[in-house]
Image 1 (cartoon, rainbow, N blue to C red):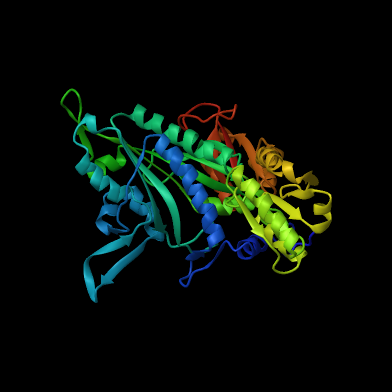
Image 2: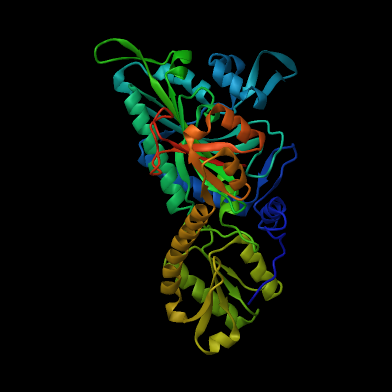
Length: 469
């Protein structure tokens, strides 16, 4: 059955549509302190599955999980000048505790390079201790002037990886491994999110990094969202925190370090990348609920059939939930569409007389009747089809909304509706300033074939520019 959206249409007011989805899909609510958020059970279930998928890949890349303190002495930040300068506008600082003024102010963790660097210096003694590959799942605080749930909040959740290596080459190789085998693999194969992979120009790098690798996704309104970043820190933090090791030759040498992270911003990316006027559209591999079995009528025979269908789906490995019939059927369908559950299985008395049920795809609203015996196998096949279709659809939207241009003026025009690609040599510092004056930034640098360059000094680089979140 066709349903009428209860959301603001994207074309009318995309920011309002986003807020409607977050609220009506029961994803999150504003916290009691400005810029904080309460993540509701459905939003948390999605984040949990993101966590699990990335954590599996992080461990597969050799990193181990650890935990470091929320409170960091301000003096730690002051050791790396560029780092403290980059983060100073966002720092939340504690000056009083226990009824007394603290001898030294404490920073509420905005990122953990400094505190982890302190302990790396203690733990690394010899080349045999390297590489040291650490990751933590935690919350961080960056005081946000214009908060928006999931996208920009003063407190958010993430993972942050930190590693120390004996050489630049090893650090560089591991940074690329993380970005390709963890982030890009997750984005493409779980989130169904195609991105432009590249490096940040110097003006957009992480504070204190010598290179920042990024994955830039395009949202439905044509704006960019930085989905994940990996930073090569060179020896800057090792020098600031005395992270030395004894080489095989017996010499004291500085480590090369990296850091990398992805956050609950990905939940916002999920909403804006795949969502439509009916609400969320969740890729099957990510979805906490892959199929919802809905009773068309609250009747014993229908409810029994719903339970049997759900049991067969569960046995086949499908994450399933039964909706037995609170409220009107149309209202319940609308609610599940807003939540973006990939498959809807409608069970009604008429269909049961014919021995069939109706399967409805959330991504394109296609529906068809199938025999009760075939539901589980058909659903498994459809979930794979939906996953692939969502990725290919997003990939096509990204390609269609990316314009190849020659000049800054052409780039500014193109970024009113999407991304622009032009020669990096045609931009330069003055071009970046012109773009920024119109709220457009260089999202990443790539080689002409779309591959990721080693650094921004390579000849003939292209750049992707866009408005962004």
